[in-house]
Image 1 (cartoon, rainbow, N blue to C red):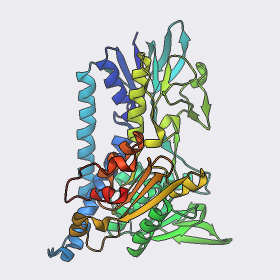
Image 2 (tube, one colour):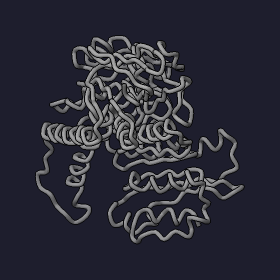
Image 3 (cartoon, rainbow, N blue to C red):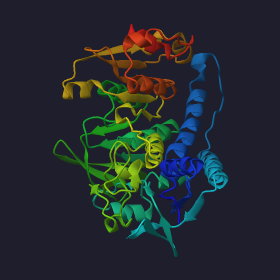
Length: 451
């Protein structure tokens, strides 16, 4: 019998398993596809690989602004896909090596919880039944597929794609319709726009990028609109078939033609057929209910990552899994969901943590929002000809604590961790004033913002 059985080998699952094994627990991971989960195989890593190639191509096309001239710069999409596959294979192998080094058993099978007998949870994994004293459910998520007319037939014939299939697209479509203007849709929009595809984004809301600070999402939209992306906001998609996407906008029925359609309207927790009902695990809207300690309502059962439907980001899963393992061994760790950073890896990047201008108003918080240009940074000006980046700081007026930080521009993804630490530790602006920032760096604008 295992001390811990982890269902799901994605970021939350494999990281938690490694931590549990290091603490002396006999651990097993059951993963139905490949170690690394969605993040490593069809999400975070492969998309960043594509986006980096697109960024290099963008630099080549616009290098004359920096006194460098490239003649005949070309992009080979097939080679980019091959490199993506190589990167994924390397990292998946690395995770497998970690499991082996930690003496963690890995079973490739679909897991289903059968029930509990005495002190043991019983889990069907392929043709065997595994027993464990504890369960950590890290089953991840899957693309949401709404009941749009023609969608399933279009997925079957290859006209419509999810974020999984588009990563293996061998030929570049001349016209791409992206249904959904959230993070996934925007990152693929960025890539295909850079490599020459005519992209149309159809978003049901009146803005892109979901809960992102509205001023920043508007800047991002304007930037990509200037590059030729067509944004249809407030558009309700009614059908996907016959080489076009039909939609309703302002009461009128319209359609946009496309060679391919990416359906990226969100993700949902993968809890179907897990057997949660056999042990009484509580769910809401298909997601497992957990508290800040990663506990479910069933003693001995924890959950982490997308399966709990809270914040579907790989680094959230990492922390939730760590918290679960620490707490099952007697600790009292918690996840601070108010300090989880998020990034949109477009070019320019968007990175956010904590309260936004909109959430401050909605919660009626006594706070000030201060906006500074990234052009206060000498390095930013040196490296970003005509850049329009900004940083927004949300400061509590009563205590001076930093409630939120939002960045639009180069290096935003690498700067946001420091901002997240400030929010998590409830630092005051006056505390940050005493920090010594390296010069010249883009992160110096944080210092400009706190004075």
